[in-house]
Length: 139
Image (cartoon, rainbow, N blue to C red; front, side):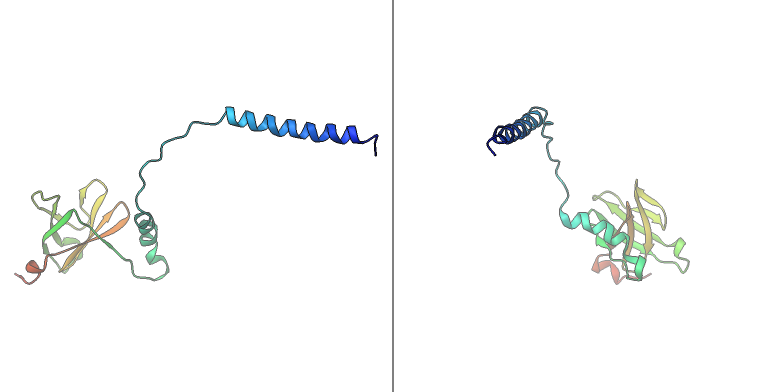
């Protein structure tokens, strides 16, 4: 055993030297820390994939309410493609848009109903409701 003690000690010291050298090489070559960008809240991140895949297994799709769009009127036709929605974006003058038309890049009118409009905003369904005071007027 006394003959092997210097060999075992040398091996342990060699392992310690390798660990120390690896630590210092990794410490010196560490990449710079990148700033973290502001991420959307976790509920917004989860809403898109779940809503996009909602209809795959027979479940009714859910839509989030769009806040910067204002629905000022609808013209519902028996042919769904001919229905028209009057939509105002960020309090600008309202535009008359048919189903399938693009409001702004990436946002299209998906469906027009009597009390609301469904928009497709980059694959996410958005619902814009007609204000209560305008819902009762029918021409």
